[in-house]
Amino acid sequence: MIDIRNLTYTVEGKNLLHHITDTWQTGTTIGIIGPNGSGKTTLLRHVYGDMKSNGSIYIDGIDNDTISRKQRAQLMAIVAQHGGDIEGLLTVGQVVRMGRYPYRHTERSDDDDTVVASVMSRLGIDDLGHRAIHQLSGGELQRTLIGRAFAQETEYIFLDEPTNHLDIQYKLGLMEQLKVYNGTVILTLHDLILAGRYCDYIVAMKDSQIAYTGTVEEVCTSERLSEVFSVPMEVGQTEQGFIVTY
Image 1 (tube, rainbow, N blue to C red):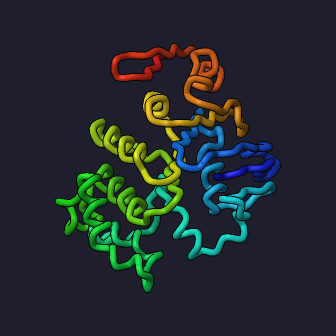
Image 2 (image 1 turned 120 degrees about the horizontal axis):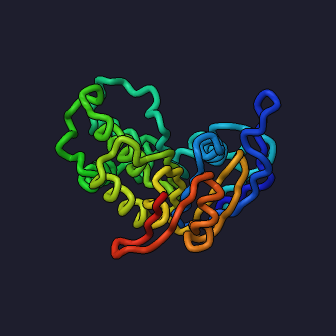
């Protein structure tokens, strides 16, 4: 469980997060939505320990500030919007295998080959194993970075706009994989249809604050989404599930 208490973050007198308090249950998919600049990524980075601020965050009852780097790597995996400084000559297989680094010199390292092969197959990148990172398309790179996170097999996985650069079939495939992920998934999303169809709990942000939290049915109403995004929206259901138009 993630317990956020009165989280505030200010830069040069401007509140980028303002009195954020919420509880995210274990084993659920939590979707953070809201317009650009509302604080989605900033909130995510604070929770996974990349930024410090006023307030408190507890992960399974442990103060987030006291978790060591090694403990954090075994507890949570992260897929940021920008993949970080990855050497372009590394292959897809090597990058995915990086997800196993937290378990070096432990019994879990015996499973490395099996885990990496399974992850690459599930994400449809098994035929890219020997391809260098610099040769990949944006979508292929994104799936590789997600594969690295999956290979960590952590209790928590944080993803910042993970469907960016992905074709529709891979967007849906990824969300299906996240839905059955053996842990807690926290992600930011611009795609409200994906949020409505795949998330168990929604955090809707506006102006650096939480506007609404709850189930899809509670938060993703026509009235509330229109308020959060400042655009008239209509929510409905089709044979495929949740739909929103504007």
